Amino acid sequence: MSQSQRPKSAATNLNVILPVLYALIVIVVASLASGAVTSVVAVVGAVLLGLYFAFGRRGRG
Image (tube, rainbow, N blue to C red):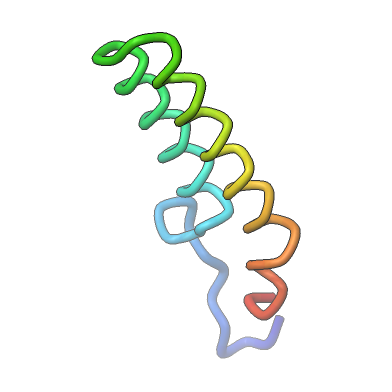
């Protein structure tokens, strides 16, 4: 990391924001919807989050 680049804080780091957002969405859906809907949201969200960590953050060093 060069001196011109500042380290990201947790509030601006997608590696922190996305998992927290995913957890909040699952909690909200679980409190408002049925178990089947919650399961679908949890599985789809987990797959998308996994894809982000596998492929999406490559160019963001």
